[in-house]
Structures are given as C-alpha cells and as structure tokens.
Image (tube, rainbow, N blue to C red; front, side):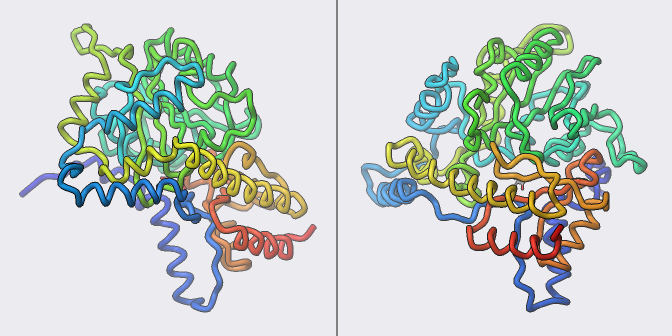
Length: 413
Ligand code: MLT
C-alpha cells in the first residue's frame, strides 16, 4: 500500500476561501433568489489595464510568427521583465536589487509555500496571528509543525505573534530566537502598514539572530502614505536577511492571469547542518530550474506593460478605484453599529470588530442571512482574529454602494 504525507492529516478541514464558498453555496441552494454581494475573497473584479491587453495580444501574434515564436522561456523569467521590475520597483526607490535577483512566478501564494523547499526542518518559525493562512498550512504540509491544539486552534511548534488593536495590528518583536519570520505589509487581513522604524527593528532582529524574514508585499501598490516603505529593501541590511514576495494580482488585476515575482538577494546566506554556509539565491535558482518552467511568454509581456507609461497610469487608476471603494466602506461603516473599523487606507481590506462581541463565524452567518453580504471571518486567519471580520474592497462601485446601503439600514445606530 502506498503511504501518504501524514502531515496533511494535521490540517484543519478546508482552506479558508473554499470553506466560505461551500457555506455560501449551501445558503444559495435554500435561498436561490438572493442577490448576494461578495466582499469576501480578495479577488479583483475590474478588467485588465488596456496596456496589458495590447501587449498580450501582440505577444499572441509573436507566437504565430516563425521569427518571433517562443518555446520554453528561462525558468527565472525573461530578462526584459526582470530588468523593468528591478529598475521601477526597487532601484528607483533606492534599493540595490539586481535583475538577476528577481524570479518571475505564477503567484505569491505559490512562492510563499514553495520557498519552504529550500529550508531545513529544524527551523523555529514565527507567524503573526491573524495571518494569511497559506503560511501556516504550507508549514503544516512540510512537516514543520506538530498537531493542532484544539483548545486554541494553533499548531504546536509554530510561534504565534498576536496582532491586535492594542498593538496597532503590528506584532511585537519576539523575545526568543526564531529562524524564519513571515511578515506581510500592507497586511492581509488587517490592512495595517509598517513604518520604517518598525521594519528596521525586524531587520535588526533578523541580523542579530541570523534569521530570514519572508516579506510578503503583494499589496504594496495600495500604500498611500508617503513615509511607508514599499519594500523591505528600503531598510538598510535587509538584503542580508529578507526574501520579498510581490505580485501583479492586486495592482494590475492578474489574479486570473497569474504573474508575480520573488526577490532573493545574492547576499542571503544560511547554514548547512555542519555549519558551512550556502547562498539561498543558488538554492532557489536550482529549485525553480528543476520544478518550474516559467510563466508564459504572453503573460510576461502583459506584466511588462505594467511598467509602460500608459500601463503605469492605468494601474494607478485601478488601485485608486479599489481604494475609493475602501474609503466608502470605511466612511459608511463609521455611521453604523459596525464602527470599529481598521485598515482600508493603505490597503484594499477593512478589518472590523464584530458587533456585541459575537464570534466571527456568527457574524458571517448574520451578514449572509440578513443583508446577503459575504465577508471573511477573522477567526479564519487565526485565533487572535476571533471577534473580527474582513471586508474586501475588490468589487464594482455599484456593489460596494449597494452593500453599504444594506448595512446602513440593518445596523443603524
Ligand atoms: C485573500 O482574500 O486573502 C486573497 O485573495 C488571498 C490570495 O491572494 O491568495
């Protein structure tokens, strides 16, 4: 009999978003005429920027032209895209990142999970709580955790750093030594951001403890405050202790198109069991060359157009559109009983306290039943998310306005 990876048996029943879909579908079976508004999963709704569409159409033409046709591309991504990213996203912000340190991929979700391939089994791993569930589940799958503790819904062996209103939704620096630390800013799910001083305290900690920070910046395009860093490499020393994950999903609407990238600086090193050092860049390069064949040429041409003059304007408009949705949601919620709201200023996510301290899933059911709105229960992101709820600003203006109208009526003060 074939044996399985038993670590999968430790996972909680279902991944958060499919679990929500399941509950919504059950509701719809019994309430088929309902006009549901989905502000749950952070999936974009607006069409791709025209510049990207044009570039992808041209790339399709290339594929039909003998002289321009492309077979396998470089596993790391095409040089022309890596150079644009290095220049526009990093060098223009004063970050010394070279094109060769950028690895194009089909998503940050995949990369934040896949990165565990290059790390050993004995690392102490810290995550925030609440947290993007992928970081936890992929560590469970990789065998980096013990079983789940049913009392607090936390996995043994992971170090949980609570983020709450009391600490402005940013985790305190741990007083123990950890090896790998997942940070996400602007934060999913709370919408909180990290200023330079705060990120510097993490970089200092990581350098002092030989730790590696796994920095998820998938939402950096939503930063509106000028003093907030967009990349961890804006902090001196970060090239020695951080890997950064970026995505075209939320800024340019590539959730269905799939393109992202991961930055692995060549200066990053880690230890072998016998104490010698290895470059993580070489390991990730080896991993990608073996397990990945790159993102399609057509899609990479689309991503390249994000950096064209018209592309930059169009992407900026998309981001502004969702941020305006977030502003409307915040403003309207503030006039209701649901007025304890956070995030939504540098982020497409609004994080709110549930009314009368009801549980996150109770509030999920209540919103679904009474106003036919789908959101995401905070407890789905971790036990410290209990009593909170996430509303996503990724939807049409019409739907956002209608959702707020329903909420204002039902939760009138
Ligand atoms: C979310 O809703 O948290 C995001 O859609 C997750 C993701 O991007 O995978």
